[in-house]
Image 1 (tube, helix red, strand yellow):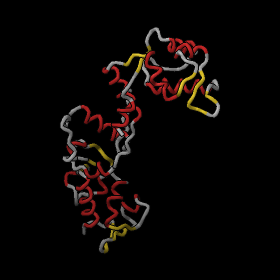
Image 2 (cartoon, one colour):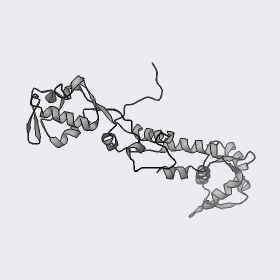
Image 3 (cartoon, helix red, strand yellow):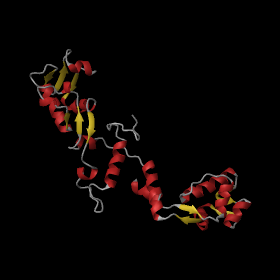
Image 4 (tube, rainbow, N blue to C red):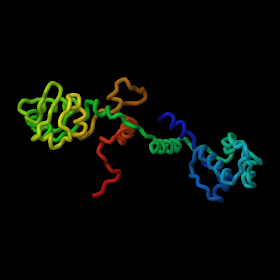
Length: 256
């Protein structure tokens, strides 16, 4: 998807100062930014033709031009696939530095990644907070309440399996919640299977953050030109995590 966007936004134009096409667009107050992509200009011209009913009847690849556009393109009619090449005499290509900025801004606004939540849970550097009543003092010394995902599952199972605890009753792999326990007040169910512990914890804990990046977490994912702590790595992390509902919301601007 990223490669597709890079190709889609790779070329940018700006009108030549003396372009009659630029003057035509300005005179008629058509909307086009200072810097624009070729397909933005060609789409605008196609929209104008459609609005003015200039397409040849029965052949929507041919446009009959009005007098002003005839002067711009030095022809009476145009074949729509030729629009790109007909526009080239009216524009300058945008330099590489400005193209880089324009392209990256559009990609950042357009790209959407549905993050696999398993990345958060399988990452050994991920930290989760859990209310202390769910991992009581029999299990957690020093009132610890922040754990890795693996530790959480282990501590919670240890807690509900502890002979000192009366919150649940265990029979093989099934757990039955006692009516007077903390679980009875918090959970809207009375029994659960051992394999459902991760599902219970996902509804109970809060994700605090992680130190691994996609590159350090996946050793097989290697790019010879990218180092683990290059800015692009954190940019990718930001894109992945901003659509992850487990991540706490942080406003773009902070006020007191």
